[in-house]
Amino acid sequence: IKARYNAVGEARAAYLPNLSGTVNRTKDRINYTDSRYPDSDVTRTTYQGGLIWRLFDFGGRDANRRAANNLLTAALASHNAQLQKVLSDVAQTYFDAITAQAALKAAIEGEDIAQATLNSAKEREAKGVIPQSDRLRATTALAQAILEHNRAHSYYQKSLAILSRVIGVPTNTVISIQEEIVENVGKIMWLY
Image (cartoon, rainbow, N blue to C red):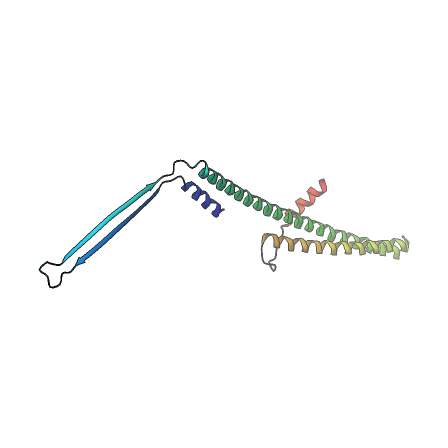
């Protein structure tokens, strides 16, 4: 952007007059040896100046100025587009991390419920109230809940790693998301 801005300045400078000047100073010494004429010193100073101002160039300067302005506009638009892309990427990965944390919280709660269901099924089976197949179903449900918990945890860790890469922090930086945000996202997801 700075280079394009400078190019616009150069294109505008073509409309200004060019002023040039020189100063010359010469000193001559004439020595007359063995002569009746005295030695002489002659010093001359000359000044020269010029002013050039181009009045007509049949659109060349204007075309250069418009081209420089268009290139500056393109550079600014490219910069804005890049900023918007980065902002969008950060927002998306942050939302993904929040969603992953909410999914992890739900998976932990699901695992707790599956464990409580299995404990209840074992007690009821020991009393003879339910058949063994119900306990086996509860055991299978707990195994699935543990699997979902592990998947949710790995997805959450992955989303935090992507977020840290997108925002440009070192990989060993610990990123934490406030619990209130996760609860609000969970409520919003429940509404949809």
